[in-house]
Image (cartoon, rainbow, N blue to C red; front, top):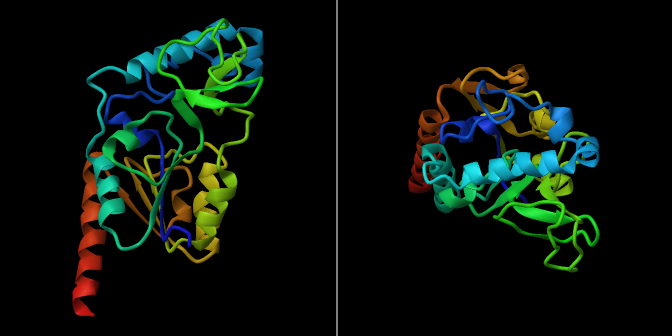
Length: 242
């Protein structure tokens, strides 16, 4: 049985934990073009530059100040306490959902703490720096490793699982997304087409806000816990009335 509640999260939920989005002034992306550090072509042209960029992002994530916030913890609580199954799909490459306690989680754009071998396709944990001499722990080949990140022009991960979840969920919730990046920006439309109620929780209206049944706006660390309280309170009340 698929998840009855499907939650999509984007950069807005991690921003309050101190992780900059690529649109932020002063962030890691400010002096880098997407074409240079987040495309297959950029990696072919200058792998050292791409390795350096993601090494910096990985090190930044290891900062002790970067911790899950109230929104991450609220989603983990929803998963623990809801009688319905919950699936979180994230566009984020950080590990804050895991550290916040979420178990049913799909990283559709990959993960900073993993590496992929272009020779044997193995995906393995990777927390240290990576470069052109890195050795694959699986096949032993040197120089074939790359960040396990879905770059622009590449297909997101887990699309079959995501499509099934969107077709069968009762409720679809989007948190902290801009509505700029497809296919995630179209998830609401798919879920709604198959009968789900759709809700946007965001700092401000996204580019696809008009496609949701309802929207609530404010900092994720405030509106997500409030929504989870409401959902769990309603479920408890329904159970008590049976």
